[in-house]
Image 1 (cartoon, rainbow, N blue to C red):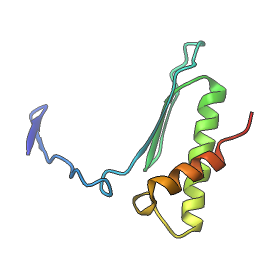
Image 2: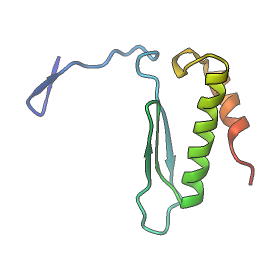
Image 3: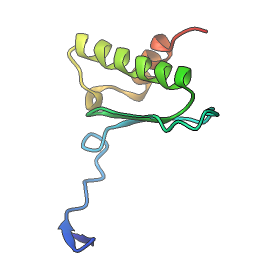
Length: 92
């Protein structure tokens, strides 16, 4: 246990299956907006409106594909995730 802000909160397991979460970070924002999208198994921060929307669409479709395969994030291999993300990234 570790003491964070006077609360005893257990440290999460280092098991990647327990901590599985995808994170997208957009660095091309020039309009001053702070864009944040959070879901159960992914978070997206920053980016221009287009970049943020593209990342959100990519991850939503990726999770839909995993669901159709009867898998969740913890069960997917890195190669499988890479392939799905590549497949679901909108083409410019």
